Image (tube, rainbow, N blue to C red; front, top):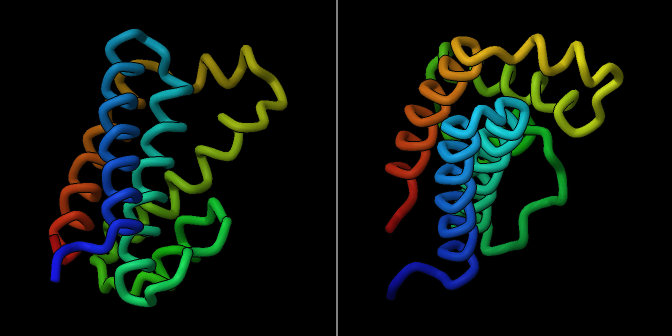
Length: 130
């Protein structure tokens, strides 16, 4: 029995979002890089949830909650990063001060988020039964 269509759909969408995060970074669109990093991790966690429960994951953006539902046991460092990514992505959706938001996401800062997202993404993907 192969991978369930719904799980594959989450994975394909997550891969697309991860690639989009890379493109946004290369284009200097750092707010969208953060947003897409969050979305890629969110969808990969939803793939894991669908894989283990056979049900559609809840419509939430909380990476901490999705992580809990996924049943994955992760390192403290990864948990800290996922929590931080979940928190920093909120202002990218609903900026209170757009100019300040742009200033706070410089190339170096966003590169760190992107690099860590790649590592977490790769680890979660390994935990899926592909």
